[in-house]
Length: 354
Image (cartoon, rainbow, N blue to C red; front, top):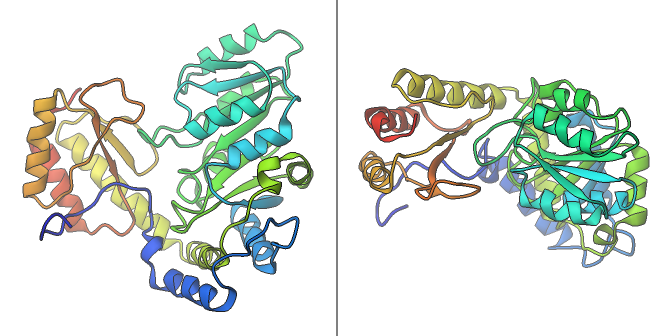
């Protein structure tokens, strides 16, 4: 809402609008009635519950992973994984536009951190060559980058890395969205889970809250043994776990969610390209458009408001002082909402960078 006006919203990351789905809300309310607000202790003391095991099993089934480990938030996933891997690598390789969660996690690895150019395989190869013949390396990257929807070329990274290298993938935005069946950036790239840890969140595609590691059985055991952050924290509130189980069930049983998301995303991208905008080729529902100037951004924002669309300028990881428009398409946007957005942006195509 803006004053007394209701505006269409194209931001946030609730890709399937499951945060307001009646069945998910019902599951959360039922969980609160049955289990209370929280367990008030870590899982290794008195805070474990059969519902955590159930959600982990459902995550394994959905993502086709050997094991899953629930965490209090998606952000802490990479740090928890890194704590369990501390001291095992000679170098950590970090995408230059990696999420802050990965930057924080790299510190726990207790080894030099080398950055490579965003999504650039040749830059990665150069960094790998600097590590030396007997280097033990781990690469940290987002699966789908939230600032512009670009996707890490994980298959090419694997080919450029030593055979014993590890991948730590923050797949907060890719999980549930990328890949033929929504399993995320690993499925999209066609890479195996061997020596790979996939960090996912429950707060984006699933619309609830919390995080999880998708990994091997031995890695999960190592996290429980070695991560202070995991052993010392209270786990996700049980009502939210109940809601996440319902969300997973909805996505697993109804492929129409993913079909609608991709149809909506493709409609907007194709419409904007036809209108003359120069869009990056990305597979996900995130669209980034940079205005030519601050005055251009204000003109577009005013036109969007007149059309009933909320204009959000962001400066996250941005080198442009003007910021940029970041549009996130959901499966539940109506065609009229999508057309309203495309009509305004198309009419003002000359105000955006090419």
